Image (cartoon, rainbow, N blue to C red; front, top):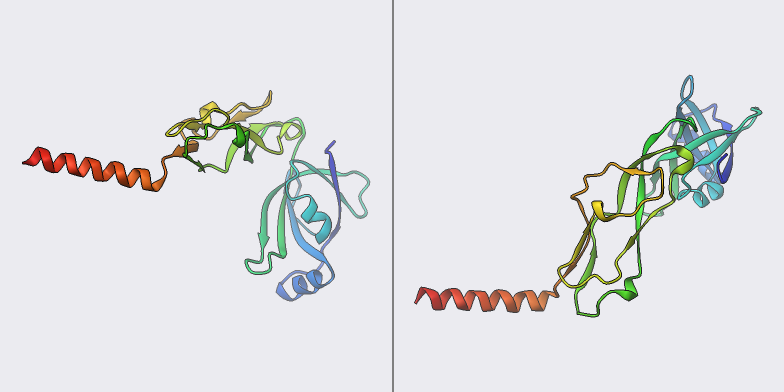
Length: 200
């Protein structure tokens, strides 16, 4: 059973006009696919859906059914200007079968990093993992405590919960601590000067 629940209704009408009317009523068009006999067009409450966008696993109760369906959010479409939720893709899953999904990375202990003037750059924001639907973490922590200038952490350095396998390339850089631009410019200028002296 999921930690979060959502009610939904089967959507009879489709098309842009029908979708606009639904959104005006505070509802969002959605489609459910995956471990089902066929795709199901749904409509879900916008406010409730917005609260669950970061949820790893959701029990969706479709009106008229007696049992909730375990689903994960596969894709979310939002208006680029208003940020209004436009459409949601939901995938029904089997709780006893591993699935592949994306999990966001969250930096922790930034205040415990070396105060050396280095600039912490968060490069990789999410990784793909394989695990049971009930084991999908909401996020994976990236501990940057103690990182010094020019240090970096890669996917291989991540610590994941038991049962969660990261399938993103272990060599991908997650975070790096770069030197301030001014320092880099000074070093490059010094190197250029040394090169000129050598040429003479």
